[in-house]
Length: 485
Image: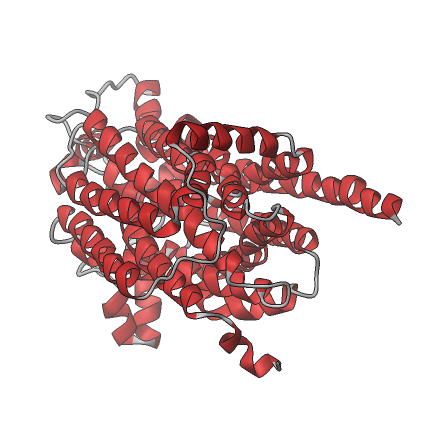
């Protein structure tokens, strides 16, 4: 079959799984792209007013569990059937998103976000396993490229709606995510067919023992575990797109510059993407990453299909490391358009290949189990990303923290942020005491404390991961192949 018929080689279940992934990602990124802003924003504008450390802890630990649980949920799906587990997953997700709208305290939000993560963990390995089951050696590279493009269509749509809805009320974001998940029930009932997998009807206790046995077996796969540990670094760097970049844009960049540039070139686009205040919301700018992937993912997947997965990932890591550095070096938001492009090209070469590589080395009838482990680097990456975007970011680049340190150095002490003393109250009082407006304070802190130095932390993590993956490929994989000849 010729290349022109490549899309016809995928069965209907492949497409059903991908559309369900689109809606699940729409719901997830609808809140996740703005979550850092919601958690740390001033309470007088409807946000929760948490500290950077609380944000990093909440996002890091809960999302860690989300990507750790597929180790178990993937095996459960293999054992009890994909459709049954998907039904449970969508029920948890729909109710979880709806409930989050009413969580205002740290621990209430933490508990409900954890509940939501269980639903996402049940869903994740099933879809990737379905893609693996419905592709073959010839179609896997394009198939996972399509899958990753679909992921980013959902990731692109969610923040666009969220950006508009949060201007009305933050809770509407959570309501929409719940509604979008409900659409997946229709797809599951009428369009998704169980992939051809081995049917097993063991009792619960025997199934649990078998899951533990399989997990121990996977943990004994040294090649897989070493690869997954290396990829923790890539994800820790990548996740700063969500953990840190929106806050960095909000605190340090004057997006009116970009708004005016777009308005001069394409007024309709500026009005569509901008806010009534003549600015561009941070989540719209970070969402450019998903936009690039929608446009270029199939092309990039085709280009890197001629390379081994490890080589493609290595080259992608270098580009992503360069892109993440450029995102944080400059204060001008116009440069983000180009730095995010560089980052996205690296991401497109790396991320789909991770799951493709794990799928290729998975033993027969353990695909979902191994796919569950393909999310382990994301679990570890979230823990590392949470620490970096919490205390490390706060000390190096968080504007309120740097401003408070500066005030203390001048002998000025202001109250801590609380429900009765908001972040905006703090900025207003500091501005009056320093006799500077908001823009002047931003410029002063930028030139005095150099918050852009945070790029060194992010790009260093990516570069070290590249070196580790190069050594893994050079001294373990290639050496084993040469000895086998």
